[in-house]
Image 1 (cartoon, rainbow, N blue to C red):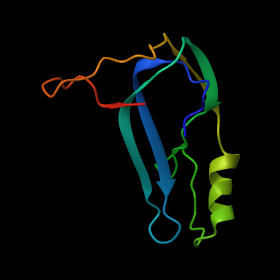
Image 2 (image 1 turned 120 degrees about the horizontal axis):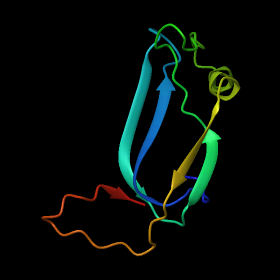
Image 3 (image 1 turned 45 degrees about the vertical axis):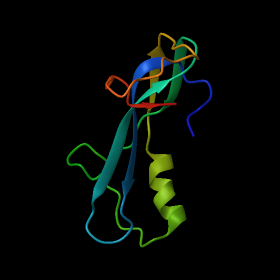
Image 4 (image 1 turned 180 degrees about the vertical axis):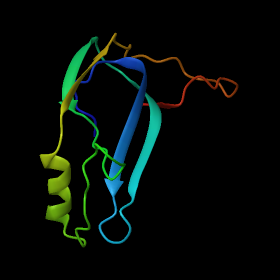
Length: 106
């Protein structure tokens, strides 16, 4: 769930990451293009964690499926980032079958 006080914008990237608990130190990422309905404003939150990427990035070792240990790597190593949006109306035009300018709208 997205925070309720995110600023509205017609174009945003919703992204999430995870690291496997056992095995090779692999870092996974997925994302989607979204629009966020809401007023103009700004929001300060946790910057996305990037790990096991190379020099200068944190290394998350195997945590053998221990949920608490795995979560601690994501909650203890972070910085904040502030984003801004110009606002996006609560009423959206309905895309037609030939209109490809809208991806996922929430």
